[in-house]
Length: 183
Image (cartoon, rainbow, N blue to C red):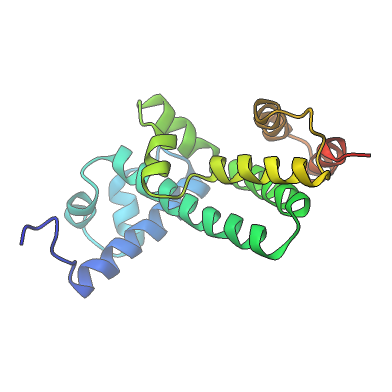
């Protein structure tokens, strides 16, 4: 059995989880320029431990972002199961804007490094964009979201909401959401 196939020891799993939490917090609070040694310090491990799990800072960015996308995918699936398509779509739309505001730098850094987040998310079955697209299509079939709204338009509206720098982003999200609804 190779190292790639062997399950991680319990202490290695704890260390990796601690590094992931510390990195997510550090990136959200201090931005992407936070040094790896600072992430290691916050995680209570050495920089060698960080490097064993994540050979580059980009791989750490990617792991944090994919972990967050997995959580958002599970949230999207729960919304789809618990609510009608229109309510689920609008809830996910708002959630993704809030998430994008909190973690914008991560996605931008990965895009700038040539990392294909969509491909990685699809491979990990956590492509949130696909879930949003499917909810949009369901909500349009159900007659709750304007059938003329394209997914490209939804992405542009999200970008506009993310660009808003005012005191109440929920107000902008609400205005956009009302515009997406039928009637």
